[in-house]
Amino acid sequence: MRYLLLFCFLGILFSCENGTSSNKKVSKDDDAKTEEVFKMYEMSEMAALMEKMHKEHAVVKEKIKKGDSIGEIPEFYYEIYSATFTDNKDNDENFKKWAKLYINAEENLYSATYNNKTDAFNNAVNVCIQCHQQKCGGPIPRIKKLLIK
Image (cartoon, rainbow, N blue to C red; front, side, top):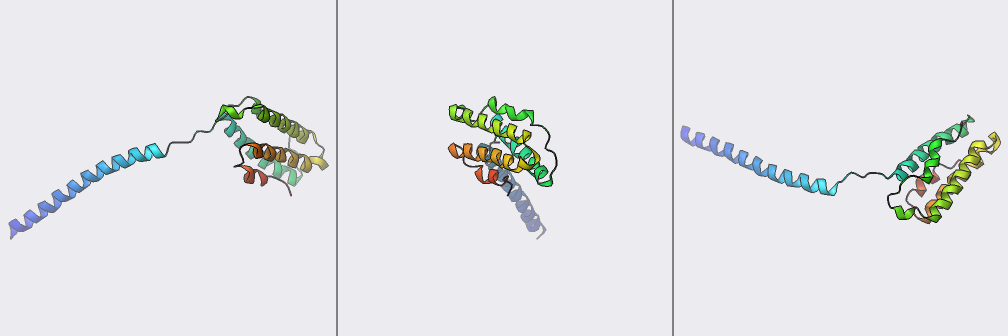
């Protein structure tokens, strides 16, 4: 009887270890597949710049709503002329036209009188929306949330 119990115990012990090693093989294969499927997205300079502009606009919106000073136009806005794109084909004449309109709208915002800040801000946001309607419409709903109602 003792030998039978010892034999069963050893059988269970070895069968568990074998199951673990085959699971390890499956796990390694799964990791390789996961690595292929989930590659880290890396933003282009332009995408990162637009994210930064969006954050800045959210701050400026709150300052305007509170009646606070918005300061001077951030220098990084001018990087719109030089930032690299995800697809360089998007840096065409149409984009350059919209970039210039955007910078003009921002300069108007930062030089506007207190009473005209809301309209000037909404104008700058609308330039973003109009530009995105031309090519990359994905962020439009998010941009529209910046508008001051």
